[in-house]
Length: 109
Image (cartoon, rainbow, N blue to C red; front, side):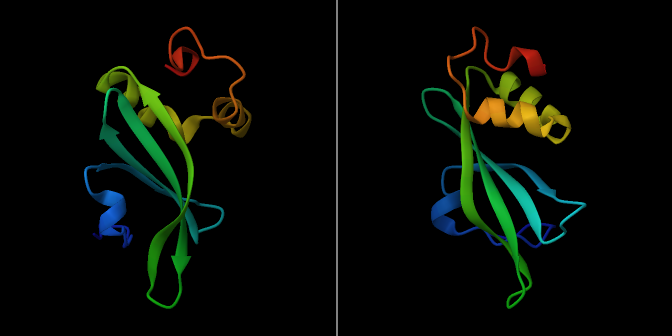
């Protein structure tokens, strides 16, 4: 699958999932983030690191960074809307929690 950012997403990665967000770094324009969602018993947002492949001139997911779970689609979309504005420190804390928050990611909404 390809989209307007010329991102090549393997079928096995996209099957059963939706593209929620793509973000290309303004500082390192060969890097980006891809957010894919799926619904299981919760709403899950998978974040992948994108890297620009010079040989095929496309961004490709090279590593899953994290997967976040949400109770409702609106919680997930609020998180997605805030994602570009989350500080690096807050993201580190979210990716390495010591105890689960009472309300998922409520301090970011």
